[in-house]
Length: 143
Image 1 (spheres, rainbow, N blue to C red):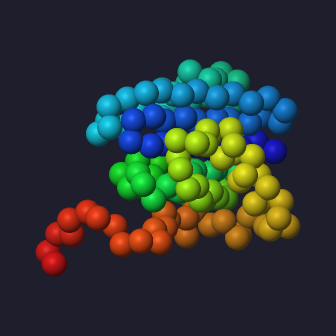
Image 2: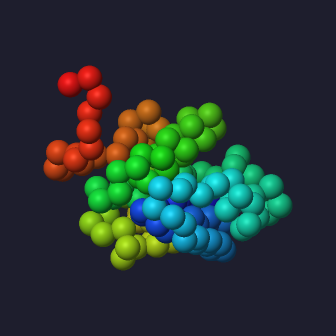
């Protein structure tokens, strides 16, 4: 099974591609308000050389309540790709994004998929929205 997983916090982003038995991972540090170019990161580990997006069976991302903007931007990126390719998008809830890397997100997503009976329709991209147990602390416009 081939998996693409991304985790992003305020100033670090990690992505991982699992291609059968090979694990390719890339991490980058960046300023808190900067979002890295994920396609450049993917190219650094072999996108369009060793694999294509069509080769990916499952997409996954880390849902972290402490990093609202990073989580939402990763979710949007992967929702677009997984929707276009009609592939499952799995959310992996994490308590502290600093303690988890993208390869562990890929492993947990794989286990969630297996536990579901490998039912892709349980992980529709349109339903893969970040969740928050507490009220978010951002300013709402027009309220």
